[in-house]
Amino acid sequence: MGFIKKGIIEVKATLHLDTQHNVGTIDSRIFGGFSEHMGRCIYEGIYDPGSPLADERGFRLDVLAALKKLRMPIMRYPGGNFVSTYNWVDGIGPRSERPRRPDYAWRSVETNQFGTDEFMEWAKELGTETMMAINLGTKGATEAAALLEYCNLPVGTYWADKRAENGHPDPYNVKLWCLGNEMDGPWQAGHVPAEEYARRADQAGKIMRGLDKSIELIACGSSGRGMATYLNYDRVTLEYCWNDIQYVSAHRYSENHRNDTGWFLAEGTEIERVIEDYAGLFDYVRGLKRSDKRVYLSFDEWNVWYKAKEMDGRWTEAPHLIEEVYNLEDALVAAQYLNAFIRRADVVKIGCIAQTVNVIAPLLTKKDGLLVQSIYYPFALMAEYAVGKSLRIALDSPVYTAGERGETPVVDVSASYAEDGTLAVFGVNRSQTEAVDLVIHAADVRAVAITGVDQLSGTDPKAANSWEQPNLLTQQAGTATVNENGDVVFSIPALGFAAVRATTAAR
Ligand code: AHR
Image 1: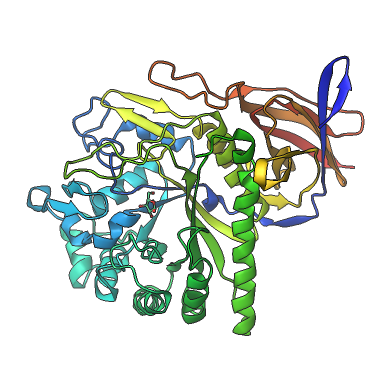
Image 2 (image 1 turned 90 degrees about the vertical axis):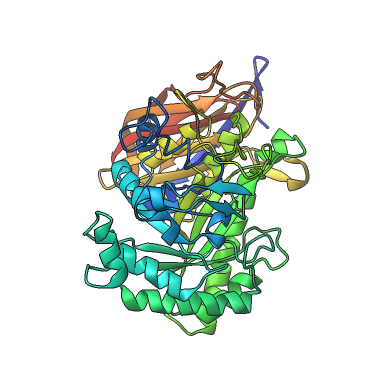
């Protein structure tokens, strides 16, 4: 994997860039979030009136402050599987009159004390646009149109007037609408074959866009690459709905059941495969249609999820469901999701980490405290610094054998170039033992000064923050230099992620 020098193995990699060679502008919406009525995401996460850390509206201020640093430009809501039996009308109006309902998806009690208006207010406080999912499982176009009217139309019609009655005269202007959730999955309430879903989605979408032409629609794609209908469900839907939708949704949850860190850390190659699959499918259907239109990928659920699998709320309120604890190797995989989205900025326009608080999330709460998990750090760094164009990657990296995934580059990397000439590179070192010396050479610009290096690393892939040791894994400042050739040179620690930034000037 490297050269032996005085008993030390040196691993070297070179990244060749050219700022004229890019794959397009990075859409900041790849750094979106997802908040579902599941477990303790909404109740006890976002909304926790009983907590000393909540404001007078019940919003957890510590959660808001931590999420603000993730700069999420969009937030998907209210589900997830939850949405497929949800009646949004239950969640509006005077709180005392809202019904308590059994939630089919998570066998929990939904109090409806938090609904559309509370979500809009919370999102405004966070500074994020909203991305609403409609129920296409057990409801249809009529209910979806009513929700759109409630959210986006000016007063003067029934549901828009209801919004005003509830204290919100101005429309919320929600631009992104998901046409159901994971409708390919047999677990989904109202799951149907692709042909039927496509008709439902098309009917709802047509009426919704008829009411508000400014909205964009996301059709359900496959809920995972392991589904027997993978890409076929998507193809049928795309062919039927081509003219009315702007995005297809993909979901992926990564796992390390085999407890093989080397194999797990090669996950980025599989994530990229999914994006490639969709890029091919979009081109295929575009060709069939002889169309000039482009449809893009909305990767609106992604994360590591395999350790915490409790999904039965046993008919209680805000049960502890899928509260995954994230370790170092998980954070390195989370960084690879974002690296893949950046590398394929031409295909992926929306991404939502699933989820935001408590439920497979970067943040965990207790009544009087907040725990920041490992996956938070690469997300925060990339959301802040991956700005501008995504540069084409030509990487010269040593490889290792990642079990059955075969030969895999030791380094996983993406690069951005901002209008002000700032070059940013995000690298994951998959080696568990050796640091990688990375040289970043841009053909047309030279680095002038290093403006920042931040990294997350450790020696134990299973190390994780806990209430007892909340800062075991946090981002640390690193160092980088500019060599006589105007290249950036720095070292990514073993089991490490690093984000390096440099100003540049023409060569
Ligand atoms: O994020 C948890 C669940 O995972 C979502 O509700 C569903 O869409 C997916 O299967």
